[in-house]
Picture 1 (cartoon, rainbow, N blue to C red):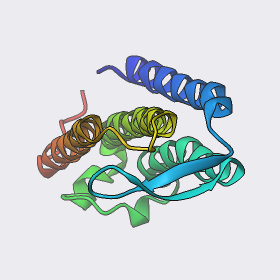
Picture 2: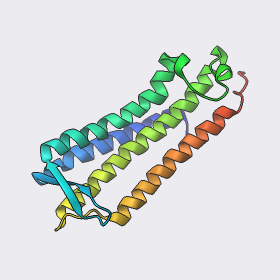
Picture 3: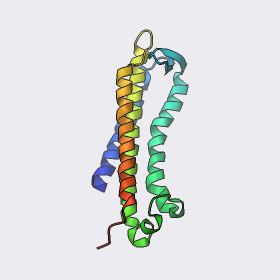
Picture 4: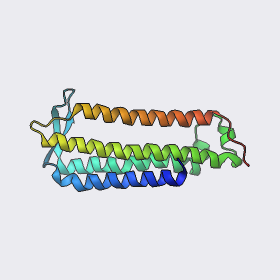
Length: 170
């Protein structure tokens, strides 16, 4: 995916996820079932205020932390970038290609994290609307599997790309 499209896709995923979570918070009960056992039945709960602080923070901050880790830190602190063929990739003539590769991975991971947290919030909403509170397990495991597959695939793609020497500048 080209950089402008990747940035737009991340921005859309992040904004839509944040908007969805914020818009649906009033649907939560005052006491939110938030921890579920292996059978999907609620085992613990927290106040709506605590849920909003914790989950709202996760939804908004984790994607931004991922972006920082992949897009900002390697530019600001290249000496701390731990990648294969480090000296080749960090040479001034190759940094643009390195940053493009890391930016793509960061945008994909951050966008998928934003969508995953919004989907988790949707499942928690659904669980709290059922009696007794029960997490839809099939959907949860499907979402978790997709999120893990995207994360592992992105990491693998980036790792394989960085194990090859950088393309020669034109």
